[in-house]
Length: 405
Image (cartoon, rainbow, N blue to C red):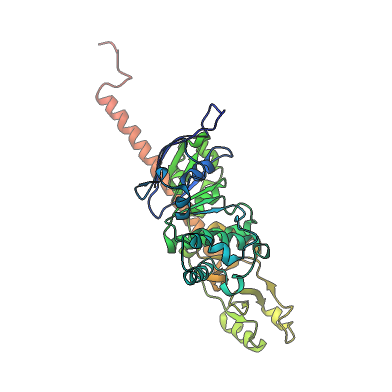
């Protein structure tokens, strides 16, 4: 995708809302626009699918100039997901997801199969959610359906305008993880707008930090922006603790995930006790009928259970996926205050556990790498200064100019 001299002016306003934006986005890349409120990032996004018509400039997708084609046809080929999902309340989940394929003339059998595929892809059981209405869904479920609808017609480009901004922090983390997983499978070209720099670091292959009128302050990888912000404006977005923000660059799947003794709610109590003794830990993870983490059970809990697990143990309040960041995992471990967090896969199924020791080792390795990089940079700087001093001395440097013969 190419944005060339893209500009938007509104009548009566002497200053353009978006001024002369130039940008190239590679196929399959996730680019995040981040900037202060009112800087023009959403306006720039909406010009890509011509929800807002550009005043001047060009937009090319796969080499095709979309500023000269039918805007309605364009919007059917570009997925669009917004905050609060934007679902039609009078339509079922299946009807919402199938609306664009239906408008483009897909046969009913193909639409039905695609709806089931999309629900499964975003981690919702087709049998359970197919006939529900938006009001019957949680905020996180609505956002998943919104993403499924945006992807239903298999568009090459997906535009996302603060899609996770209206949900609670835990749900937001899981939706971000889901998007990362989807992108790994689908390889769409994604342009994502957010005001949350941590979200930008987590999701973006590259980040465009925008000033007013969408002027680009820096357009680079998250790691490059964290370690070498272009100016004070960009540094303001990075904020304090840049080293800790780098925890958003490493995934749970990149560190060691250990197995834990598990049991299901239907297992006999004696079998669970035996599994605990053989596992080498002082607790077992109880899974529900769908294989999802349900309760942590300690030895004492089992001894007091008196034949029933109904009131025994501690409910699992938080989990992370393999696509979650180390920062997500560290927050979950600290919140739980038990030194570990369960790792889940598709539809929340248990996959393993990551513990505090593993996370802290990763943090120490990251901080040590930063320390060595800083030392190397300092050494190179000193070498450069020493070389400059030698050159001045050998060639009659500034300190010798004008000296008496």
